[in-house]
Image (cartoon, rainbow, N blue to C red; front, side):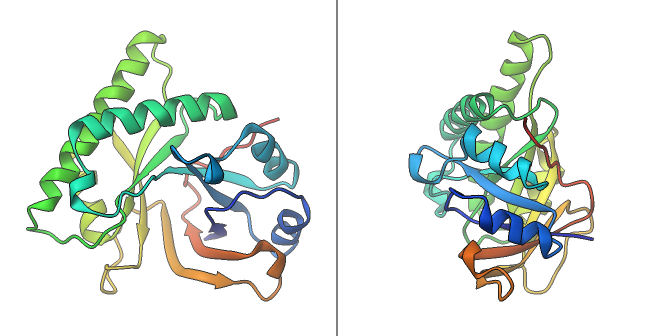
Length: 211
């Protein structure tokens, strides 16, 4: 299993990235968002890639209440993600994960709202493909066990899963590509990396590099 981290804050210098690489980490999770402060940029993507690390991306604004999740919001968020991925140079065929960052369980009515959101995401990415000769990014879901299981089963185009241990009650989804197993920690070997989450990959998390 490959080891990585994710964090909301951008990497503005090479030193923490080189420390991560030297300490055995292989990938970094970063964000697309409406909020400029946490957006992955092409310059940062080049910096991460130059350190020999891979990048995985997740779209998240708030995404932390049931009311956030609507079909129209899914369309809008996917449009923003497409624009961000294009500006970064993220290769087509690699995934953008979309976050479900609140406590939700099987049987909750809120899951239908989350489903509607991902239908919007899916439709917008299908439009991207139709208008660009089939070129698109793959879709992933980030969330707890029940959230990722539900979306992976009900949304056809979601083919990547990034599970968090939070709200999962010890259950691990068998088909996760990424598994976030520790939040808001500081690495003793790389304190200059700041506060990060720890993530494992099954080797098919959808990482990419840019040049």
